Length: 78
Image (cartoon, helix red, strand yellow):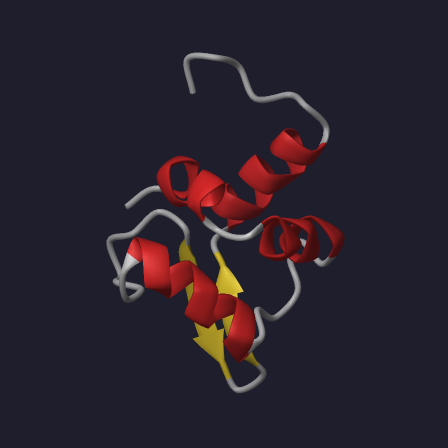
């Protein structure tokens, strides 16, 4: 599932955390909320970044999309 599909299905507080902390390690409670609607992160999911010793990261594509969404830059056809 793409970020565009799961984004409206997560809690507004989760969306706000992702906007406020865009690019940071995604804490387990936020990742749990995402995976509850999007399913487990898989390597082919465009929103999945790397898992490092610090934790889970969203992909650069997802980070850019969140920034655009936060700035109301996402077009209707995206």
